[in-house]
Image (tube, rainbow, N blue to C red; front, side, top):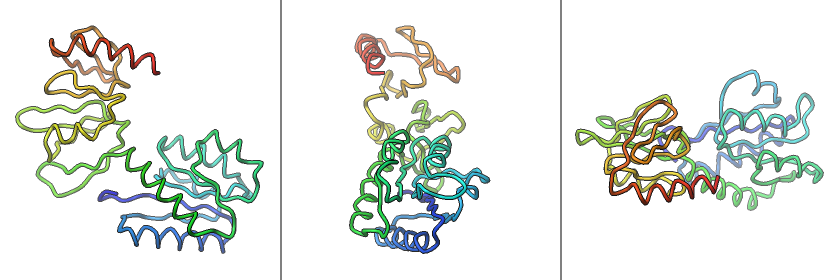
Length: 237
């Protein structure tokens, strides 16, 4: 899952279940050699008082000082790609949970086989939401949220990945990196540019202007095909 590892939250005000779920999740991650860190919290207030974001969360729905649904909404505001599981024995909460795109409900005591099956699905989802990159001149691995990528370019034999706040020089080929991008909203408009269409602020047939002001040319031989694709992209949205 990358060099940084998954950031996991487990929040339950019943200590026995908090400890049990933490043990199951640790066993799953270690068995699969996935790097991870776990924050265990007996109170949602502990989480809200901090500013951490998480990749994966297990939340008890019924807790004394704040319900799990409200906590889930705050966590999703911090990371829109978080995978959320709810722990509950009460079916009446399931409609509310749909608002935060919950992965699955688990009942107490936990069915380990069902828990691990849910984690398998979450790992597939998280793998699709991020791209792992190696930085040029370094052995460090970085995990970047795909939605945060504005564009990928190659210049002076180097490949650069640009997000809203960072610029990474990547240790792989341009084509290798581009193949990892979702084709629904990434498009190669030029031999040296692949663009995340979510960040296009202005389109003028021969040029794209992104939300950060970057101007990216559309190659002449790409213009007709991209023009058609652009309006299909707008229709899907």
